[in-house]
Image (cartoon, rainbow, N blue to C red; front, side):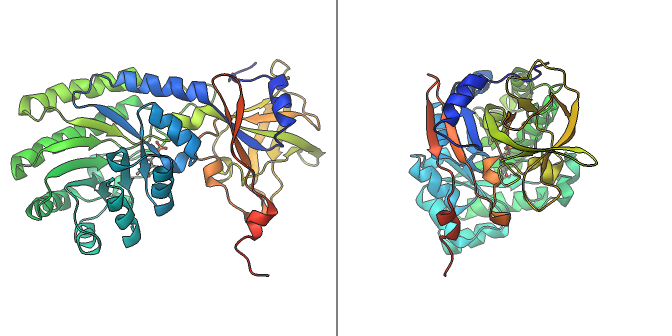
Length: 414
Ligand SMILES: *Cc1c(COP(=O)(O)O)cnc(C)c1O
């Protein structure tokens, strides 16, 4: 019955709860590192080098960012605080990819100061960057392939997406950048989110490789890296399979050899900006059952709410739930698992078959390592939880304390 295994036992969590009140998110360091190594190993063939820029928005915690830096990753930022977080985590220079949109001047100033790779979302941003900051030697543009690529559910059809430049604008953008003295160029796109079909990423690489060749032929510029963006999905449901990274890598390698090699563009570095698949499966929201309520349905009320994990409420997203110590009992107790917000969509699960749940049970919500804590908010006076790191040695480290009412009041004038 235990469809999704956990890296800790009930006894271990009970011990942790003696010093850390629920709810909290806990991240599994060993699993994060193991996955990062597998990811890098799959792409070790890339001639100029492979790099994943961890999308900070997925899990904006310096302890995690430092750990990922040790595994060879950089950060993908899209706001001033994310740039500052990277800097304070010791990540600077071209280890930062600044992929923003609708960008305020101050953010370009900071990105340039950090010597981050600046990835422009619009043609007009070239002149904006030049007038507000000055142009760097290296410029990347974000491509929106429009009709050339079908979108997926979360990110939608590229033609309706606010991101990126059209093909025609890209030719103009690179030409203009070159005329203005830019000497180094990158090419980016991101057209999927939480995508489990591995072919999708191979197609994206294909598209960018072909475009790199075209840019070389028409403008004489050499694209030094293609950035395939993020969007690799994770198996939220027990019957989902993780994306086979070796398959993706092999597909991209074939495409590289077919498209890049014959045109003498080799080496072109390959970058990604994955967030979700890097930390998502390795985080867990641990909460306690406060109340069991039976009206027209059964309700299991937790001490966590959608302020701690918003995905089920906003996307109807599935997050697997384990009741600790009851993994092997029959799952015949159909219930809605709720939080305490005065919003009826504050539910972690609807009509979910669980084992017989009682007050005081410890509930683990799976796959909260990306876009979990990060999407938190304070509506209804709800406070954001602590974050813990379960170390490779089994020791637990507090990497963010829980908010207090004083934090909540800190911006107010009484
Ligand atoms: C959100 C985002 C990512 C990361 O997406 P994941 O689904 O977490 O892999 C990468 N790049 C950009 C520009 C993003 O907006």
